[in-house]
Image 1: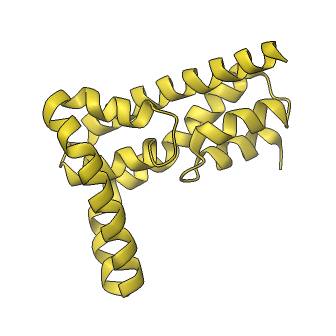
Image 2 (image 1 turned 120 degrees about the vertical axis):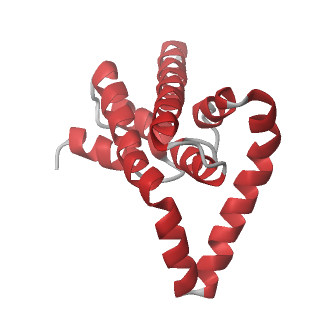
Length: 152
């Protein structure tokens, strides 16, 4: 499997998303920085299409399957709702973009899809807002990588 496919697949994973993928693809797999950026954004967005559409059905199905899964999803939903409610009430759509754009653990596109689901933001609107957040996060991480490398 080539580094391009690995980059896309790695960027699709939760928690890691493009925040961990860009340094690996650029620093370890030696991909060009622009290719790294675009492949990471692409990979990060692929699950968003699925998650935005399936969260209501998936959450309902999984919560019925096991108490442990129900506990875990309740924890994620409550944490996301609590963390995002005030910001969304105050800043609206900008809050979703910022939630996705901040390159920290438990923020990002996956968390953005949960927030969209919890706050009933329409599919295409969520898709656009999350995409903007992913682009910003990608730029932050890419510029951070370039700055780090120039320091070395």
